[in-house]
Amino acid sequence: MPILSAHLLKTSTAVALELEVGVVEPPTRALMLGTLRRLFGSPIKQNHARRNVHQALALIGL
View 1 (tube, rainbow, N blue to C red):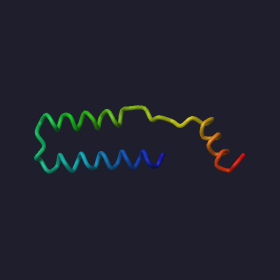
View 2 (view 1 turned 135 degrees about the vertical axis):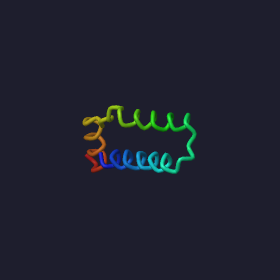
View 3 (view 1 turned 45 degrees about the vertical axis):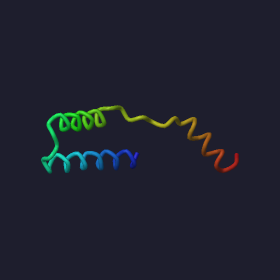
View 4 (view 1 turned 30 degrees about the vertical axis):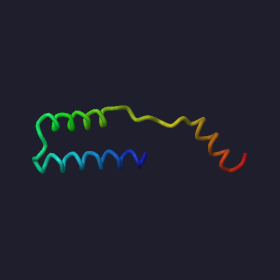
């Protein structure tokens, strides 16, 4: 999950910095904010435990 947290932080910071500069056109601003809202609102995709166990066992040769 740390990669997801880092991605959310990086993306929201990038959007905030772009909007702070003030050179973003209103339609682009709305698109950026809508995309960020969608990113934060979408459910977190969880890994499948069975697949993880299978991959771990394959890694150690069992």
